[in-house]
Image: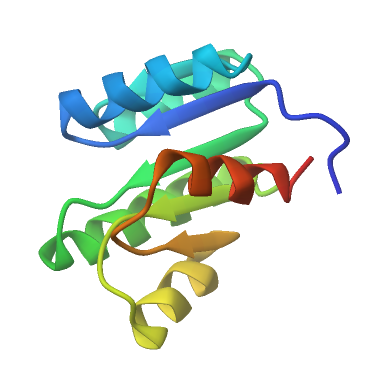
Length: 123
């Protein structure tokens, strides 16, 4: 288990979501970076050490895209915990994410403070 999470990578294809989360986590003392697609996310991970990755899910039609992102990151960086946020509460969906390599799935609605509590589980 990690002793200290300092650097977060926030991956989502909706700019407003990543900017809101970036501002929130920076206000809580984290260093955070954003990626609007998986290619950028992989590039950031290969260039800089990340302690945790948050992946935003826009809707149920994007589940397979998120699974692919998780698998891609997990190929080269399996030690980095990943939390998927968004989507509906579904054991089947959660199992897909976990099987791909995510540590946690937080379904909608989720408050930023709740997400922070989830992240603290990895401290």
